[in-house]
Image (tube, rainbow, N blue to C red):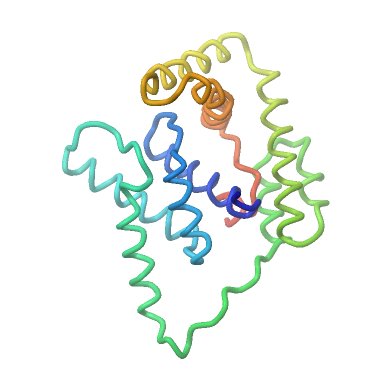
Length: 208
């Protein structure tokens, strides 16, 4: 079972990937393993984001049809860039990764969340796993409250986007797994439509 830090990192990678793709997508368990490996190896999220942008841009320049449907398509480029970055640092000069600056990341997150959550994000305390667990709970609360306040027109638009993605997955996933995926897709589309961040110490907003 992936730990809370892995989950936050994966959500942040998924958010970048879906934004660049321009359409909702459920990343697979194999994609999860790729992102989990990057996290455990210490691949910085900003490097992942930069390389994903380059991969999508080069594909567009080539005029390649269709959308990228798996994080694994981008994995060789990310891992090559990470190897190059590590090569630039002599082995004797390499050190352990600096600990997370939790207060700084919480301040950055607080600047990106709806007004009602700012003070609650800033008030979080504890080590990284404890803060990440608290952020995950706040993230679920933020999504639920945002969904409840949607206008009827936006709700219909979102439901149509989710159903379209699920229809494309029919036949590739068992029916029960498709149904379980509905909520995850709904939250993904909601973030896109309302510009909501992933509440995680590893999200792009937390590292600004």
